[in-house]
Image (cartoon, rainbow, N blue to C red; front, side):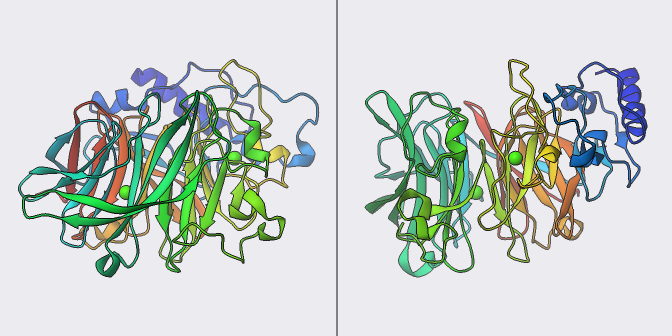
Amino acid sequence: MSLRMLVLAGATLLLGACVEAPPVEPADDTSAQAAAGRSVMVATPARAAPSAEAATPAQQPQAAPALKAPEQQTGGRGYRHRLVEADPPFQVQPVATLSEPWAMVFLPDGRLLVTQKGGQLRLVNVASGNIGTIAGVPAVAYGGQGGLGDVILHPQFASNRRIYLSYIERSGSNYGAVVVRAQLTLDASGGGSLSNVERVWEQVPKLGGQGHFSHRLAFDGSQKLWITSGDRQAFDPAQDMTGNLGKILRLNDDGSVPADNPFAAQGGIAAQVWTLGHRNPLGIAFDAQGRLWSHEMGPAGGDELNLILRGRNYGWPLVSNGNHYDGTPIPNHDTRPDLEAPKAWWTPVIAPAGMIIYSGNLFPTFRGDAFIGGLASQALVRVRFNDTSAAEFRRYPMGRRIREVEQGPDGAIWLLEDASNGRLLKLVPPA
Ligand SMILES: [Ca+2]
Ligand SMILES: [Ca+2]
């Protein structure tokens, strides 16, 4: 993207507060401007809302939805300005290289469990860079977007040694995510093994194709297990309560359904559901107030960061701030106030993957901000909250697809690159 285009795009956004934005060329590669070594303020005015967001439902035409222009900008009602920083407030230390790493979690001893999409669970000694193997991982269906997925620890891991894994299994020509728990035993040579592997959840129904599994995991402070389940690129299942695709689920740690779930009275699969109407949620995290946030990939435009509220419908595929890939328009979120709108959204997309809400001491100014990995955007995206409002605050170009973000025990930020030789990166304050 040229400097001239950047200026044009910035000017367009400023004008967008009062007039319909004229077409400009798509700004689809934000990383390029940083690669060129420039710091560019993309937009500044705190009250300047993009026109699509400012319109009330009453002002919005109720006829066929308009095709949203590709240059429509990132939205949100929190801090408005977005700065691409060529000189980030951290230095990057490569620690190890793994094969298609997908997710990671720190053990209490400071070592790191890392999943590899091909089906291997690795144990990384972050001090030495030594990489060991954890045996006993179930066979996974590797291919497309599928394979071994997330790994998290049980809140009482120190006493019960339980970890949770998500991965894809195949049944005939169909696929679906499953979640298992297992006990981890470490050996003296830098590796270990799993035992007592128990299935706690699976996607229903299994479908053909190998996309939009999501299968990100988190525990809350009440020992409830949270699972993101994508729409499997099938759209309508996200609104169908007879299945758990396109939903965020809340379960007890053994996979049973809590009696106080919002749809528990419906029984069956619906009882698992906390929220519906999701597309491909690949990041989930609790903030310091205990609020749950999840991002999800939009179609052509319309990546979202959502505040996850009990029993709500997040709109997919009825509404989106993006369009279908074939150009078919999708009504904007603001045409359906009954459906929960994203707190922040991105067009062009960032392709979000992995997320933390920072709570460490190593970067005091980061506290309370979300850090989201960017695949297509090849960046670390920093979101600042203002109570329950949110908006992109800074974008740090990384030059590679970022799959996973984790906070280390000392407050360093750790990233996994999405690549056949993906690096484990440690971010620390500049020397
Ligand atoms: Ca993680
Ligand atoms: Ca949505």
